[in-house]
Image 1 (cartoon, rainbow, N blue to C red):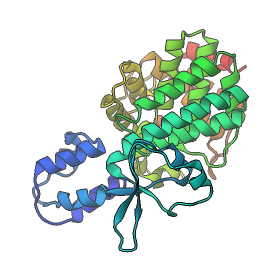
Image 2 (image 1 turned 120 degrees about the vertical axis):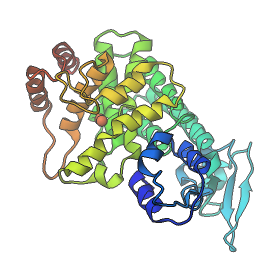
Image 3 (image 1 turned 90 degrees about the vertical axis):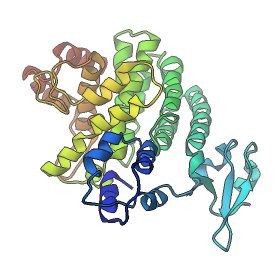
Length: 360
Ligand SMILES: [Fe+2]
Ligand SMILES: [Fe+2]
């Protein structure tokens, strides 16, 4: 359910309930109370937030078949003929591989929504181990696939508890993988069919780590830039999927919605336990321009990492995002387009030049 659907549901649902429930609701969805007061706290409407809360937080969610062997700390359930959820695997043990391979378990298994964050952490851990193995075999396709799996799983519930876990993935990449120069860039040559926010974010991260290696950043700096790049668009997880996927140009209203991914992403990351402020600043400022023509604030005081990610973000989108009204550009053409914006004073010239060299 996305924000727009929430607004519609709230607008059309019935009787009065109190603000604490609404606050709990927004704590669950990570929207600040101000978002609530701005959109919903209108005495002309009486909202049945409790009813909505029940609809929103389904108690059980289906577990992905490919992840069944990862779950140890979280219990799994099946649905009996009467529609009741029954414990199938208690916490603390894993499903046997043999049982999974032979399909000797109920077709659909579920986990409790309240276990979601723990389950994401288990999936992240398992995939991080796989990532180390994939790196050893030096197969970029496997490495990329594993990273996409990790990020995809994390972005299903991007909030405190799940997002921090992804920093281990970036650490593995910058310490185990990026040691050999240019190798992360190989990830970019592995093409995927479906261009999504996850794929875009992974590509922006790979290019950023390439930039950091070219600039001889320390390991710690590489990790921060890689994480900032990977999470720059995390706010899109809360934007209407129809807006994100539309194959046509956005209307003004849709574009206004889309722009909110910066402030929403900033808010999400603010609630996490990341200690480096660059990560949240990049989410907020990566669409700002040095001449003040960007969004969300039209600011000209833009953090350095946000300036780097802004250029790489643009380059990645130009070279990969193929839509009916706009075809993906060749790297040189993309650099020429960005150079025009550099000349117009929108992007940092020095960073642009360094980035262009890092691509060689
Ligand atoms: Fe963005
Ligand atoms: Fe982006």
